[in-house]
Length: 434
Ligand code: GAP
Image (cartoon, rainbow, N blue to C red):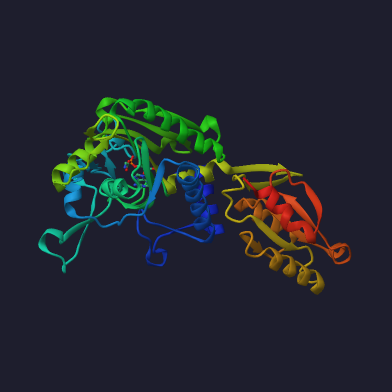
């Protein structure tokens, strides 16, 4: 990856504890990443904001957490056994491997060398369960969370009796045996998806498809991604997945080019129809008004947690010059920032100042994700917090001992305000509210 911006992001992620190479002490595992103390908070915040917007702030979407392992016949019905394949070629010169669609003019994109003939490969991860009955021995790790929703469709109908249109949302791990995993965490073998399957009357599907494209685009903008770095790209007919009638990608302008963040597909009634056939269970919806049973159409907004995280990081990364010195600041939305408040004693060798700073820390502990740091000079401490996107830094100084006030510094403006210790919790709560 020869991209200066990406190198800075990768370095920051490792240095500050966002993202580490998976199994690093054993030389790493390609396409696998571990999320450190800051990465896990950022991931959690992304998932919470998504869940809040699609489940808590609506009345028509139900949450679900289905299993990663599913009956092997699910993948037959879904078409994944037959169709979830990638085609790849190897370079005879540099030995690198590429997906066929990454190659132009039938030469190696890296060294221009000759390529081998293409080969097919199913992207599902196989696993097995020796104790199970024969039919269940060969299992797959799910390549999308969507199928868990379809196989629970009847359960939701029977327990909640929703009327069309309604949706089912879930967040969970998915696994794909990706042939190539370039560009840091963009394409990985293990990742999390945030998926909604939105069930509509067939005649309303197009309208809901347009609705969800707009809704999801607005979500990224709402949480801080700059409009000009997002676009919607409609799939050509030949690009469509086997189940889709239409699909649009929300793309982000990554340093390595415009790439998919999320796909919104009109899956028609493909999935419910196929699972009905394979399972011999009737997965139709009964429309009481019209007195007919029908297979609803499905609109599917499907987003990747790690891809969103990478886009939020890249978009938030800023370098600026302050009084002749470089400042790196992650301008993450406050709701996304992994650490909300940092408490920094101005004089780490002055016992009373340190003690008071610790008392302020204890006062705020449990109400905010916070960091206490007294391991460097104040300039360095501020720089550390700016680099991880902490919205507020609190400093305790000698004057604090007398007036029981602290200095609160805001990340983006760097404006400082003296706030009474008695009021600092409410002060922060007010400003961090969203
Ligand atoms: N259920 C539909 C579905 O899975 P997809 O376009 O294959 O559609 C949806 O995946 C989203 O999941 C993508 O837009 C992307 O954000 C994320 N995703 C897919 N494959 C990924 C991978 N190998 N690594 C990281 N994220 C991935």
